[in-house]
Image (cartoon, rainbow, N blue to C red):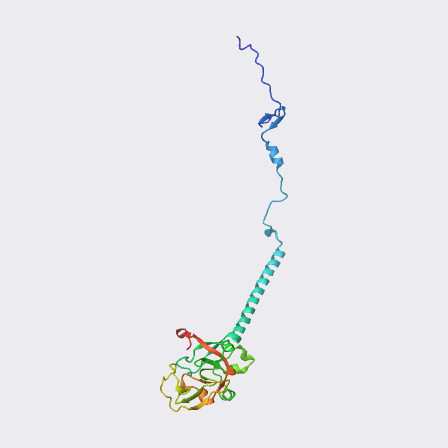
Length: 264
């Protein structure tokens, strides 16, 4: 057979677009495409109206300055409120809770020395009465204030109540109902010598000491003496102290650093 002269039927060309797309025929002979043309992909995308950007960079200079000034004003206001609250809290603490005292004399040696700074609890005696052995801060009787210079600074309330400028620190050795007497610097309480390990001179009597005759402490009163019994202007000279004059219980020395500790 002459293959060169044999008529080979041409392969029918499927109808479709002259593109590089892959084509398939459905059962009904309808052309379908398994891929989209590049133009179809491009035209199918939605073009955004604008490109996302850092809008803060587009703020007007005036608005930016105004915003910065507002932030600065708010920060200043926040600081002012914090300072005001701190001052109010400090005033409340000093008035009702804790007061600091500076000791200028040696009347409470060796427990408290000149230059020491101590804290006094102002709330203690709102809840209870002074007890024997407590170191108390108090306003001395009027006759003492008329003759003596201020010994310890008072609270911030001293601007309104000058009595606070005359705060003394001594030790309560007898309270209402006690029978007490002082002879040669030695306290006799309810018929017995009082054990006082805190005294500067121990059990030795003070020469030329003004005795305090034996008597009963009246209601609402107490007897306050210095630990440096031989060098203290205290109750053995001017008598009993009204409890209402007591301001605070001294409980902690916070200065100097080498002597920080609880007072006893």
